Image (tube, rainbow, N blue to C red; front, side):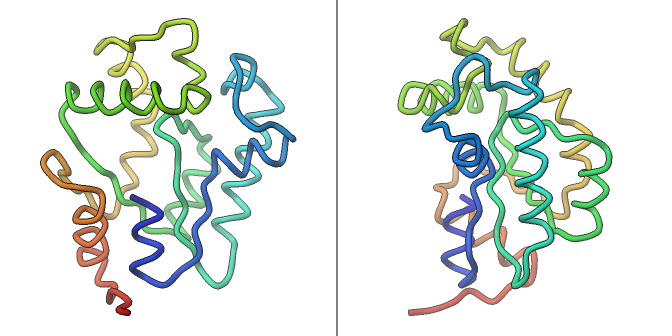
Length: 164
């Protein structure tokens, strides 16, 4: 959705996950490149902070598993509008399963456990709660395509959509 928002708004896009992997010289994450890994975690924070300080502004795509510290949450509150895309736990599980099947490297926490259960997703949600609480816009995307969700998020932020 972040890529679509960037395209519609006429901005650059930064994918924090991909940029972190690139900075560490990796094509994809492994079990060792999780948030318990200090190198990955530090690079992740630096990429996010750099994107938040970027001018002109850009749309920043955060991975579903993004867990950030209080300092970064404060920076997000000051410098960004966070769009929280909400869905039911079952829908989140279905989306994660589909994405993990296509790009398992983006979900290192599920490499050992190929099918994320609802309990695990709930624990991850709770760990990200401080980030979610900073959301400027909460968007129920239960029945929306990414393109429609991106348009609604921009409208909620009061951003004119760039046309062809």
